[in-house]
Length: 456
Image (cartoon, rainbow, N blue to C red):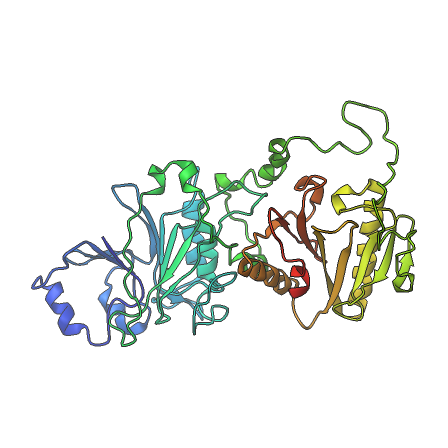
């Protein structure tokens, strides 16, 4: 089987095509093509719903799903994104994309499609990934195609039109710790056939249909897998009611199941394990040696202290990244956020809220991070960034990109979750929190660059 994306007909195709149309020549294997991408080639496609153009050459149609006898599912969308309404015959609209999504997402137990064929690239496909060379993936391509790919979760997505070959690193179709694991997507863009730069225009591969695969094998995550590049676009898109597929229904269940596999359950507030008596406020452990950050310690540099609360204090960072780089620290000796008592944690939350309000009044947003690795006293680093310099999404993307370069798996966790739900006391970790409430987490299992947060 040969699948073609991009412009099937060239500018001087008429005489050559006549030989295939009349039967003088025949395609050696079954060939499936997408429709016109411009007005000039519309006449080659007589039936918008799809038809045989010549022996062994089939036009798939404007949009839909082709199912092979093996069970292979190929979703397709012909044309380019419409820039006007009504959409020209060689373009697709938001309505076309929605109807294609609905036809598949409403299918019981829908998990995704094997292959997605589009002519335009999806916008932002290069986010979190290897470089696409001279192609700026933030500006080229179609946002509607990005939305379609995010919804249909193809195992392979092929596109063209940018005259370049680009094989993106595979990306996840689920949020780690929040959704059940799903298969990855591989995006491959192909160059023009016969291009003078000899860029790759053909991609040969074999594929076992999703319906025939062992579920555990299907969802295996390769080592070079990245985060989904379309999440930011989907957050920005206008909200519309779309049917949920079965895979999306348990949303956060996987996150809360995680503790069951990690052994001890975190006691509920006001109860100890196996005891219904109210728990007493627990004193923080005492440091085994001199501590630079316990407020009662003679080692602490008190000239840097800005504010002192009941359980926490605020101090300027020594060697800060900016003049208003501050630290939130517990007055008592606690090693990490997961070790904090409820009273201390509550005051930390109040400090974060106050800092958010203060920095916003100065035209800034903050990023907060904690490194619970080779440190004996909790330090929450709070660094303000001008609002007009970057968005929260830019900051998150910078952390994820830098993490991938360092081969660090930085995972997004639910905004309203407690960090103690993913890390037990004593667990080394690195943790980022934006003032939007978004959180990123890395479980440290080996060496970790001590300056990682500052580098970003």
